[in-house]
Length: 340
Image 1: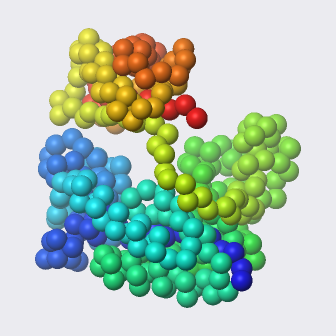
Image 2 (image 1 turned 180 degrees about the vertical axis):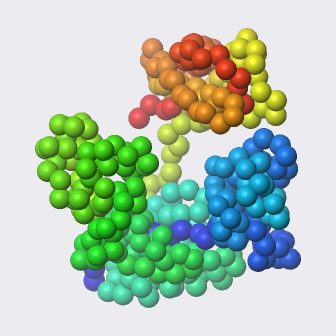
Image 3 (image 1 turned 120 degrees about the vertical axis):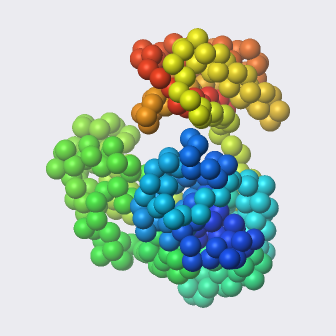
């Protein structure tokens, strides 16, 4: 028996759940976000495959989505509905002979001992569909990184295996930001150093890259490009690392006294969440999205781990003081990060 890591990812999860109660919309471009009104400010939570063909994607302003796909059906977010579906999905996965590590509403890693991981993956798909009438894709790997990336090649509703043996054949010529953990900024920086592909990054001397991007980051990037990562699947219950609150304003805030008041309010609400969870915060981050869509963050460390509401609120206001530009604001957010 061989140890495998499987990554299960529900296909267009939120849109698919909505289609279960609105089957008449099947085949149409669906966009879920905000309260479902694309004339209001808000962002896309998910888009169906049909909407994605028009360039609509998660995180995009609803108004932009409406311009790209004017015939789309817009639906409001129903968090309770998605959470209920997620509970059923994860419960189904836990019935299998595997270690299950939940990553979010719609994805999980499974640690499996089997000589036929494809057959196990198809059994996962069969059971999830029987329990929820939803489809999932399953990636198979020798570690978490390989399994996570394999899932993308299996979508929709497919199974794909990615191992050390096939790693460079599948990914070698692809840009570095195909790797889980490398974003566009890091990829751009690597490109500036003459490293454009996964293979080029994998062949880079870790010590040389460490001198350019940092002693920890350099070797880690090379390790990613070589397909090396942890294969340990942890079934411990998921514990949030932070709590956050955000507000999108339908009209830009131009008065920064008002901005300050709103940040204080968000800080107090986040602090109350911290108290409710009986956790302690160590760092507070404020996010400001200027009009039209330019986002910046600043953080403030707390003097000591605390759940004191006033201390967290004051830290949020202090973090706001680090913003030098007093441009019109469309969104504010406050995040409290927990100790440990």
